[in-house]
Image: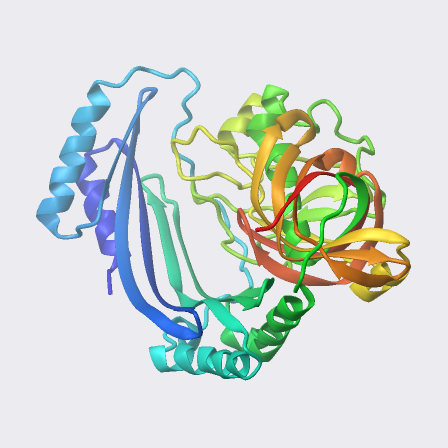
Length: 442
C-alpha cells in the first residue's frame, strides 16, 4: 500500500518553496471476456502513478512517473523544476488553489466488489452461456470489477482523497442474424441483476431476427436509457462546459435563463448525493457543487473550473480536469429527472416510431446545436399502431440534439445508471422526430 501522505510531503520538500501539486492515482481491476459461448480471456492489472505539477511566476511544468522510490521522485522533481525554467510565461495562469472544506459524498466503495475473484465472474458468465446453448444463441461480452483511488495534494495545504469500486457487466447475444445487448455498471455487485441483463440481451436477439429496411426520413424515436444517455452526454459536455460557453461555441452561450429545450427535460450534475455519485472534489482539490443545468427546459447554469470561472467573472463549480488542460470542464455526475411513462406505454401510444436499444460510433458534427451522427445497434425495431411490428437493420442518424430534445413527447419513470463521459443516470425518452439517412445490414 502506497503511503500517499509521505510521498506528497517528500515531493513538496524537494520542490524547495515552488508551488507544487501532486496527484496520485491507483487503479486495480480484473476482466473476464467471453465470445462464441466460451470464456476467452482473464486479465488483471494494478497501476499506480504520480503526476507532479509546478507553478511559479506565471510558468508551469508537469512530470508523471510510475515509480515511488526516493531516487525516482528526486529525479522527477529535478527534471520538472529544470523544465519550469524554460517555459513561457502565461499571464492568465492561476496560482495553485488553496484548501476548502469538502463535503462528504455517498459511499461508493465496496471491498468485496473491488476484489471479486475470477471464479465469481466465471460463474456469472457460465449461467448465460448455458442458457444460450439451449436456444442456439451465442454470447459475447465482458464482466469486470476493480477500484480506483485518487489523492490530490498541494503545497498550499490542499489534501483530498477518494476511493471507489466498480463492476460492469456487458452482454451481446447473437441469434442467427439477430443481435441483442444489455449492460449494467455499478459500484457494488449487489446492485446488478445478472439474470435481468442476460434475459434482456437474449430476448432482444431473438426479436431482432430477420431485420428489415425502412425508408430514410424523419421518424419519432423511443430511446432506451443507454441510447438516451449517449446523446445527452454530448449535449451536456458541449452545451454546459465552461470553456465552450466562454468561447461562444455552446448553444447555452448568451442564453442562460432561456427555455431552449423541452419543458419535460431537467438535468443536474451532483457528485455528492445524486443518483450518479462520485468524487466530491475536482482535480485541483476544490469542492464539487451541485449544479442545476436545465430546469423544465430552461438552461440555468454551466460548470466551471477556476480558469473558466475567472474568465466568466464567476466562481468555480468544482469541475476542473487534471491541469494543465486545454479541454473544457464538464459535468461528470449527471442525473436526468424521471417522468411518468414506461417504455411499454411509449410503444402503446405510438402510431409509428423507431425503438432504439443502443447507439455506437456517435460523433459530434456541429457544436453550436450539438448536431451528431451515429448508428443504431443490437436491437432496433419499428413500432406501428402501438406494437413492435418488426426488427430493423441498423440505421444511421444525423440530428441536432438541441432540436431533438426540444421536442420530447415522454420521459421514462425509471432511470438507469450509464457509463458515458462520466456517470449518467438516465430514463428512456420518446422524441418527436429523428432524421435517419440510411440503413445497413450490420
